[in-house]
Length: 635
Image 1 (cartoon, rainbow, N blue to C red):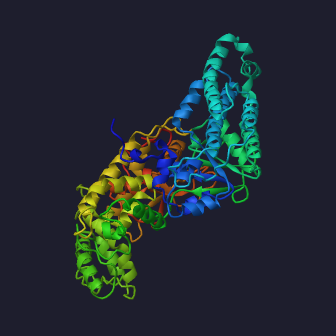
Image 2: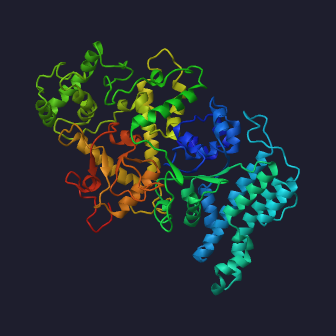
Image 3: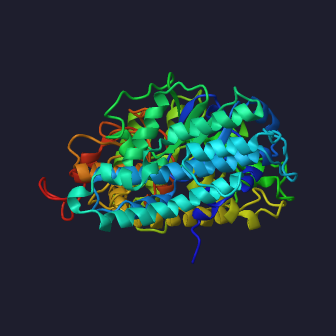
């Protein structure tokens, strides 16, 4: 089976020790290490699993980064990583038979959840008593085995209602795994043993007595007994719940309720997608935790491309440490600066040197490269010519003085701001105003700033692109080291891989969301509409690059957008409205992820007005042949 361009770098499949080998700390990790309940909110690939695994005991012992010791000294808890991926959800779904009453299904699901949490806790307690000499810090949170360890293990087993064959953590693990098997068997036998009228929650509890165990009480009693025995009564423990949006709603509700708890002993750190049941019904039945007071919420996305640049640079430098040809080099040296940002010095032909500033001879070089773009567009686009006249410029006889980009020039800031729009419009617009159906123009997505922007600060995306360029980073005689054509090829492949992924996204029960509107088809409509405004409409110096989800948009479209947000295909321009993400996307503005920009020939602009989504989808510039009427479903 072919491994996806991005999935090959999924931390879910790596042991914590492997994750720690290349982990680079950054501001999001700094926030997560605090001694408080935390919600880690981000789309797929944004690093949630990596961040939580790095807080586990195994990863913190193995970590060799220069700042690792500082973090180990600061951390005041022992991390217990609890995976909750789709495999675990399928196990619970298989366990909770559909013909059982809802309360019985919830009880069985919570029992399976309890076993998984206790298994993770057991592994971590055992690790506290043992060291791995190969680790960077084998003694981190290592404690000597207490003399009364048999008593501690016996008490834990009794509290968890386990029958063990020896006084060891290995015996507890075996008993917990046996309990999972017993859950399957007992729930099936319960189905056939009881008459329908007798299959009540009371009957199920009588048939499987350990269903009444409370996972939180089990955890607290165990760590209290353990810490008392090792002489660290004031120690703290952090339960790290990964990919929690996939677990049953009843379990989400119980865990999120604990975020209001003030236990000195246990803190919870939970990874969630931006949208899901946890932002709608899960928190409606009780007072939500207060952000800042009860819980710290950490967003794993960047609204503006500049915000992600620092993280991307640190990640790049860490990856290049293993490349002898590039060690110590800056990403700008390897890839060159980007040629189509608002402040770019020139349009950057393939492998052309890109100038770092806008002073002296550099202004002349800028003008020499950009002037043909302005001249050509002014000839084929009367609305652009009109715009130039309104600025006091002569579109019929443009010269270097008129498009001087210097801040001190009369139109300097405007000229620099619109340059990339002029280039895009000139490239894709024919003389008759129609779009040119040419091969995608990828040079605007090359150069370090552009590559970082396309990645959205998503570590899986950036690592995927860097890994694909590894073999190109060996010829240090060129400038930049990796050619624009090689960068273009990788960006095109990354964008295509992402679009193919979006085309196959499930629309039924996707993190609790269902819709009749295919995700990528909706994104395509949006991207094409924005592209039409940019290329075919009247010239705008600030064309819309984002869209507002207004009240006229159907609910199915809203749900499709919620799924897109969870996959990182759209990025919010507005703050979330919920402590755990977005309870609604209506009334908020979003832009397409920059990874989709090559697909729709859009510039990497973080500015631009917002257009109502209903106008983009059903406005006068759109064909209505394939769209819905007011009562029908979307296309």
